Length: 181
Image (cartoon, rainbow, N blue to C red; front, top):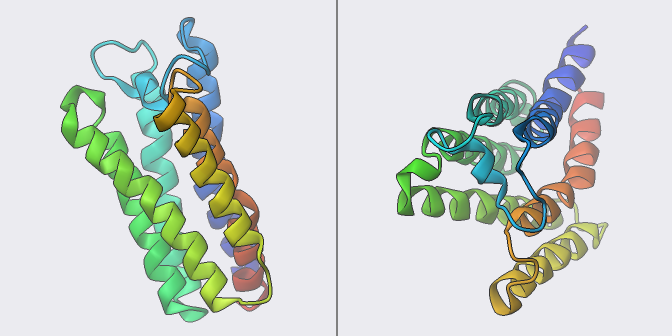
């Protein structure tokens, strides 16, 4: 049963935010992947789907933190702390939505930097794969294109790229942790 709980908690940490981001984007009626940032969906005073979006981030962060503090901590303390920090910073993005201006930008940067740190940490701990470095490179390239050429116009694509390239690494780590639970 512990293995099943491990997998369920870990998967919910990724699935809930992605699912609710998707639902919010479809239900908004105005969101454009090329012209908006994902967090536009969470703007408390301008978005009709802010509750859905911010709830997804908060719930996802809760499950990532639970996975890291209950299961992962027994497997690898460094990666657990990085996951806890990523989960915490994701929750900060939900709490300090775009209404908070610069504060929102800062916590968003912290979240995406925490994902990069997680990839680097995974590479250092499990030196048998260059996949985390490849993922980091793809993420960095998407941000470079966005900040240098404003391509695309909105930040949603580099945000999604940065989140999705971590998914295979996270799932591999989940498999390692839950298999040894």
